[in-house]
Length: 148
Image 1: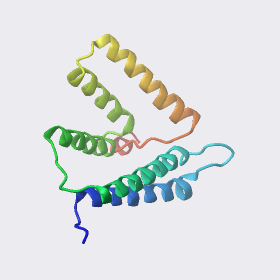
Image 2 (image 1 turned 180 degrees about the horizontal axis):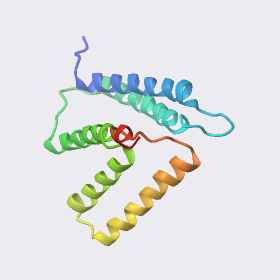
Image 3 (image 1 turned 90 degrees about the horizontal axis):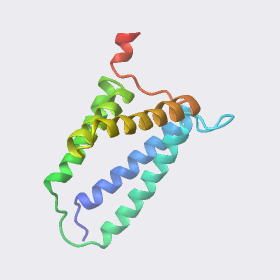
Image 4 (image 1 turned 135 degrees about the horizontal axis):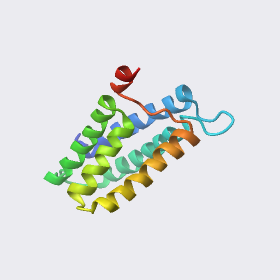
């Protein structure tokens, strides 16, 4: 008899979230209208999530024993929660800036000069490619209501 544990539950949640994101990307955001639309990249990432979830679930059926968790792994989860919360509070682009700044200066201990270069490249890709070229509208969070 199969025992329900996190090795099986988490991949199923991953598949469900991927399916939800795919539906939103395809039908609400617009996948492809005269070129890639705002739902193009989220839909592709949703398909990757679904495939990764399926692969992880299949592998979990073959494994024996309980999942082992380490303290550093929870820091990754906290980082994801922080990004999610930050996106709703201050918006996506400022959250990316704060995340990169904390990651590069605190954890990687990179110089300010190199941090500025990496930040410039990341913002060029974020705003230039996704914002202007693909036309993705980034969430502004609560700033949207303050700014107007």
